[in-house]
Length: 137
Image 1 (cartoon, rainbow, N blue to C red):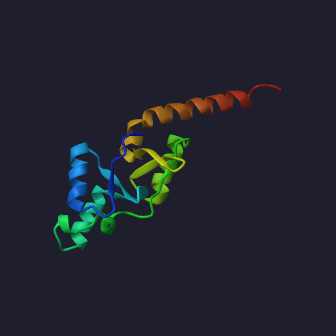
Image 2: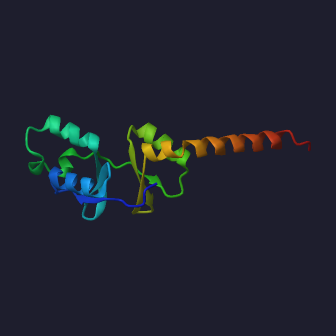
Image 3: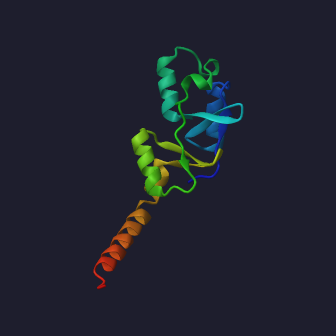
């Protein structure tokens, strides 16, 4: 999980959002309305907006291109749960929430980076379960 969540207001332009994404080196920004998360804008959303709208990015408001509703995962969720949520929702950026507060974001890239650890954890859990099941009563 990346703990720096970059956000832009819903009435900002795509040009402003692109500036924020490039300045912070992220692939998505959370879109807020009245300081509450309302959607997410990803690189894919920029491509779709450029294809759909025949206007410059400084004339297209973020809310017109953002993906909604915002899918999130709780702070207590496992990496496995986050991976399933990403897959099931068909998204590649998943904000992490602690109650109503956004505390981070998990991406498919983050999960690929820890895949070896997840595989090792799964193997360890399987060995423990097998050993427990083979223990005589």
